[in-house]
Length: 373
Image 1 (cartoon, rainbow, N blue to C red):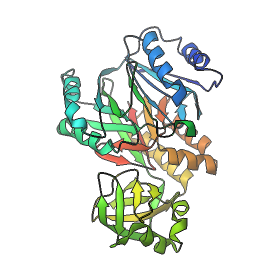
Image 2 (cartoon, rainbow, N blue to C red; image 1 turned 180 degrees about the vertical axis):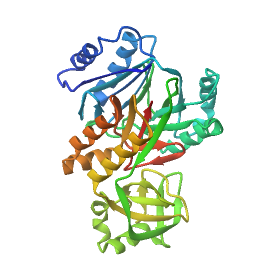
Image 3 (cartoon, one colour; image 1 turned 90 degrees about the vertical axis):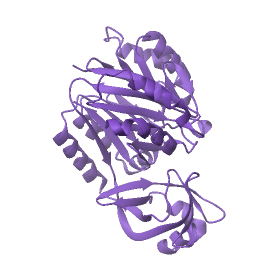
Image 4 (cartoon, rainbow, N blue to C red; image 1 turned 30 degrees about the vertical axis):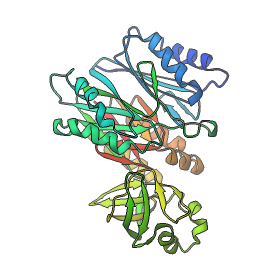
């Protein structure tokens, strides 16, 4: 049987005091839990990583910096968020380093972690990956090499940072060691029931559809749509000047439509040569639609219905894109979002960063969740 504990502190006076408040909330834990998730703002992260491992030396502890800390116990841009899982799971862990170059060189870490298990039913891989290396797709390819044939789903997110002072610095942690340019992961077998994953999309396609005709996949740059410079092609559809396009693209990501599903990627910048850089890959000669938002509260309600229809959740992990978090704050939807998560599961832990991963797809402007029976 799972026992889940969440703790949250938004104390900004000192990292020591903030961490002390978290420990006080976790004092009901009588032994080392099997697994601890944590996130924090950048200035607190190394301290939290080191001291959680000191207080729970027999636990596997995995963490990520995040743009926003949230769990069942609270939510705030800064501070510390922790979830501890006790009982009902079997786990092992590992790390890929140098993910911007060749994480496949470290696939032995995954093979070693897999050998911990006698069977792979009701099992998943949960990973946190640092930002800005363009390494997420390489990481997912590495996981797929060994996990796809075993039908082990991959769930995770790209780390973030809380303030402009920390721009371009994101970190992940495993068992007290902090990494940059890395992916940390745990393989988790649910001994108490099934696992359910879900992808929430708050966008729908417009009639503005483009074919990517010149793409640098590795660097996530689209040079041409419909055989003309990418920024000019989109600016024409939006009836705006190219110089105003960056602002116009906020809240208007691109979506690759496959049957009834949509895979979202967000523009990171419009370049001087009229190419556009994105936060995840767009592939050559794929059709892409410019997106617009749905009725967001209705999407929340639909997500809740579908999750509750598929699983009686004991605890849940959530990755919510930083751009969605900013949109929710602007539209006054943060409270509704948090209450929806609380209605879906008695305990949850989330991070908010610069990408979401589900199986072999790296996404933006999306929420992914994984729930455990």
